[in-house]
Every structure is written in C-alpha cells, then in structure tokens.
Image (cartoon, rainbow, N blue to C red; front, side, top):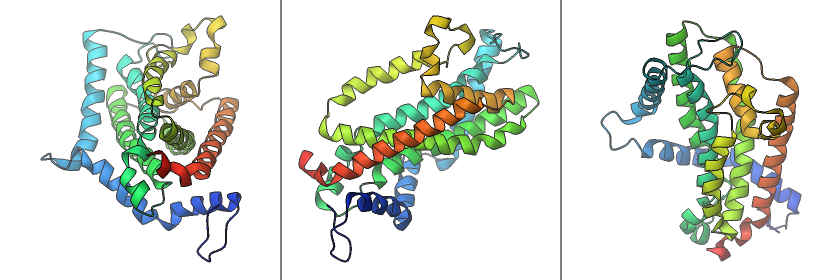
Length: 281
C-alpha cells in the first residue's frame, strides 16, 4: 500500500483516487512533457512548429489529389454522395487509427524507455502514458484541422456536425488512454509483447473499414465491424466530417461504456503494480 503525506497507509481505492488527483496536481509537469514531445520533431527545422500544421495539410492535399485526379478512385457505395473523394475518405479513416496505433506502440515501452525516472526519481508514473496519449491526439488534431480545411476547399461545404467532434475525441481519449495504461503495464512485465503487437496493429488496419466501406462486408462477417471499436471511431469521424450525419446513438452508447471500462481496467492495473515497476527494469 502507498503512504499518504501524513504518513498513514492508504487503501487501494485511495491510491487510485490519489493517482487521478495527480493529473491535476502535476498538470504543469504534464504540460512540460507534452510540449517537449510535440516540439521534439520540429525544433531543428527552419519553420519549427509550423510543420505541425503544414505537414498534415500537404499530406491530405496530395492524397486527395492523387486519388481523385490520377487514379480516379471514388467511393460510390455512399448513398446520396456518389462523388465522394476517396482521398478524403481514406485520410478520415486513417486519423483515428493512427492515434490508436501510436498510443499502443508508445505505451508498450513508455516505462522501460523512462527507466531512469522509474528507478532513481520519485516521479508520478501516471503521467508517462497520459503525456504520450495527449501528444498523439494533439498531432492528430492538426490532421483533423487539415482534413476539415481541404474538405471545405474540395466540396465547397462544411457540415455543422463537425462541432461535435470534441465529444467524440473525449471518448476516444478515454479508450486509447486505457489501452496505453494497460500496454505500459504489460510491456513492463513482458517485454516481448511488443513483437506480438506490431503484426496485430498491421492486421487491425485491414480489419478496420479504412480502405473499404462497411456496406461491402458480407453479413456472415459483419461481426468484424460490429465488434471492432476502431470501426466505430472511423465511421463516426466520417459521419461528422464528411457526411454531416450523427453517429448511431446505440453504438455511441456502447462505445462510451466500453471506453470507460477499458480506462478503468487499464488505470487500476497500472496503479496496482506501479510500485513494482522498478524491479522489472
């Protein structure tokens, strides 16, 4: 059991709530870690942080241009929108998938990669997966902004449903943050799990409707979409940004409950075993 500042031992529920309170008490430290990770890739370039905006904008523009003008690929499976540009369709599906895959890949090694902090410094370990998750979401936030800009330029319209994106991102963050805590716990005790995770992430790319529309899935395989939380995120992003539709209400409720459950399980396991992380490094 952990010991409080008064010297009294805390119960395990007390440890969990104390760890949650750490997010607020050490918010300045969280901001420092996020800022350092976000700017690390741009500090040696001439334009610096401008690339965080310019990079996604260039990427989505070229994907849109290539798939519409050079290859002539269109997604004609969407009723009422036969001219939907496949580049926009593809990029919109990539954004939630990349946020998920990056959080898992970084989370699996976040404790081992910070062994100096874990072994030698009294440090709130809860901030490590949280800062990496924030960093991934901030990076994809610029991608969403670029997608919205290019969508408006390409189609000449912008759906009002984009204002609901922050609600979706909050639930998405709970989901991938819970996975990040779970992966960091597992990766600390089983380092080889990273070798299993890489092909799993590649496989999930093809099992998620990023390249293909859900309407083309045979009924016998519909469970691949219904039970895939990434499929919900991809479809919801497209509904809000590209189609101007609201995500399915029951699916949203199920995913929200699932995201909360994943966060609780991942965070509780992380808090329960974090006192022993240093012994595994």
